[in-house]
Image (tube, rainbow, N blue to C red):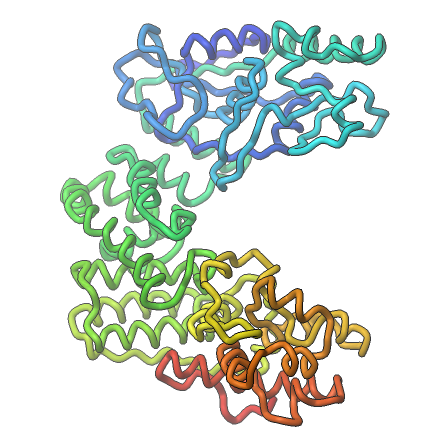
Length: 555
């Protein structure tokens, strides 16, 4: 570094500097990642005059204007009338929060995880007792809270007395003290001057590695100076539908690396991919040439998962790395639809990987690298074979809880949807749009009701198993209540045909005198779990077209 020096500035003055557009966000910086809790913690530290860390600034002239980020930040854009540029190397998150609060307006931003932070919902409590939180975040206020809490944006505005009127003398004194403390707080600005951009990038990575650790993707974006890699990844995400835009940036970068020949996985592979682009002109030209094909391959993979494999949206994908493998197939296949033979192989891979949880634990690295090679062969030879080595224990179905997203539970819900679930009363098809959310528990029905099983001493580890779950939308749930299965399955259907269609569509075993028809709850539930486990196993294998379960094991 050519020079490093420090200045202090009050938050009131800092607000003015921000409004002048003197600060700029460089391409290497992360997007906004803070949440409401961090914003409240920052205010609490300022109120108590605790250090909040330095704001590190790269002061440079207009020659580095091409390093400005054009998108994805929430501070005012850099004003080109300024002679110098103050690039924020560290402190962007703090400065962004402070600016939104200091401007006295109730704006909102969406962080990297897709969660909205509404600054008008950050409150100061002038009535807080010792030990209570002074700054809190609330989406909705009770009547009492509405009379005591004051929005921080109101408190810091120039018309704060009018906005915060109606409080007693003691509360108003506390509000005034809070306002004075925040606006008068002295922030520490550390300036570094250098003409070497690599020094700036290295500084950013070192600082964030020692403090809040930056993820693999942000580290890669910081290293990439020859491409706007963040923008390219966002371009891919923006084109994805059915919730697949929530795919992680690391997964997209890993797909890039594998497509361009990497044989490794994880941070090391992505850093190797970025390094090649930085030092090798041939690799940069190659990547620039194949990127449109890569982007199309990822969008084709998402569409194929939805329309051919029965994954309604990203929440139901058994394992996120499956998107890498499916994207690689389309990339090597020239982004054309797979042949009938290749489609059969991809279906086998999908169900074997989901039900067998092949991308978890020790199987993650060897199975992913083997599958990447397999789909590359499959693109050139549709009759290519692969041994997925899956021999699933039937007991794994019973131990899988429906409320915990994972490979097996997500594959289970995809299977249920493909079975075409029907209403219990008349046997008509349930519109799949009514069961479109993985997190929505209201459309997932316990076949043997929880309250009923609890009365018989059966715990949640068994009654919350996927074996005891099916899709029933509201109109059936209200009819079922907490009744025993033999009761509601017998009298709700309007006909024998409707009953048969409903049971078959929900993959529920219906042998008379056994399982749901047994008058003994304990014995019936025990036999039901065993019968449904094997029924689901056969249904999974029918979809896959291959054996997946260990037949030597007894339930």
